[in-house]
Amino acid sequence: MHRRDGTHTAAALPDSLVRCAMRTQDTVILEDALCQNPFSADPYIVQRRARSILCLPLINQGKLIGILYLENNLAPQVFTADRVTVLKVLASQAAISLENTRLYRDLEDRDARIRRLVEANVVGVVMWTLDGAIIGANEAFLHMVQYGHEDLASGRVSWTDLTPAEWRDRDERAVADLKATGIFQPFEKEYFRKNGSRVPVLLAGALFEGSRNEGVAFVLDLSEQKRAEQERERLRQLEAELAHISRVSTLGEMAASLAHEIKQPIAAAITSANSCLEWLAHDPPNLDRARAAAARIDKYGNRAAEIIDRIRSLYKKSPPQRELVDVNGIIEEMLTLLKGEANRYSVAMRRELAADLPKIMVDRVQLQQVFMNLMLNAIEAMKDSGGELTVKSELRDGQLQFSVSDTGVGLPMEKMDQMFSAFFTTKPQGSGMGLAISCSIVESHGGRLWATATHARGATFHFTLPTQVTESSPLVA
Image: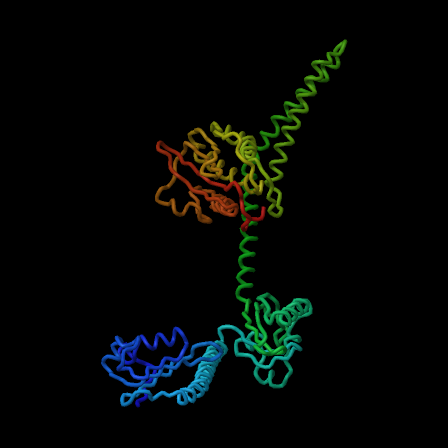
């Protein structure tokens, strides 16, 4: 009888017999393999001409661990009942030993993986007890809190002392989760460093298997991420300041035109007031004509107030405030506000506004600034020759689309890719911020801004806004 190892090719063992034992998990015995049997056609049995064959499954807790295969080439009926009983006892012990070997190997592999993770110092790893003691930590964690291994060995460091008072309630919830489920989900908090400063961290952890008091936590240093967020916030604030400065500067340049726009309704109101007084002075007073004159005073006064309110809203510096807005109404407001500027340069203004556009949630002042920037650019492009400015609105592919077209000098095609960059301008006195700010505002509302050249002359600036605007990172007005 010969011993064979567990690795075999198809011809090294009777494959059909072994598969049968594995499938049924029952012992298969051929008392004389040369006699006719269910496995007589197996290539191994035909070639090997073995006499006695035993195939015994190794089972542990109902799980197939392996197969014990024995054969005798000299005599039949070698595997008697007594011998098989002894072999089954031995096989049971072998199955237990094999399973234990596998479990130990898996445990060693797992320990090795954990050890590699701890020693790699990719994240902080800290072992602790629920009462606050830190019983071990890797270099990454110690570097975060600026302690050394000697501090841990002395017992001077505990995770409760490392935790600022305002975070202790959150730690208590994590401990409650550990006691209930054995794990706590990731959450952000802060630790004190040795020098008293703080480090923001993200951590998650679990109790060790079989332990109710000791566990491990994985700790990620969020310092860089927090610093990056503060740069982003500072950039948003700077962009907001530039947007406000741009509006104020633009309105300053338009001061003469705006003064003319305000003077018109005020002058008309004064004229109507004088008429009213005259009709009242008649004998008898002409009350009907006096009422008509008074109505005109009210009309012109309200018109002047509206113009002043629009100017004031553009000067105002306040946090973003989104509200349900009729964008066509904003277009009409800006056409009224810029009417004097357009007349000054012999620019006719046309509107092609789609009826029944849905209202959308936007920041009114920011959207006013987009239209003002685009429309003033269009007027600027036509100031030497006059022309026509057209503002269009429509609903296209589920989005609101707007365009501002002019018949002016056209676009510098070789610089189209720079047009929306900050500080790029083709105007001698331009700041180069109008289009960049408009682009930021539109994108913060979930839309897109782009430009095209017209077939004849001039340019068209288009932008879209979704009908359901999502909150992103709007500019501060």
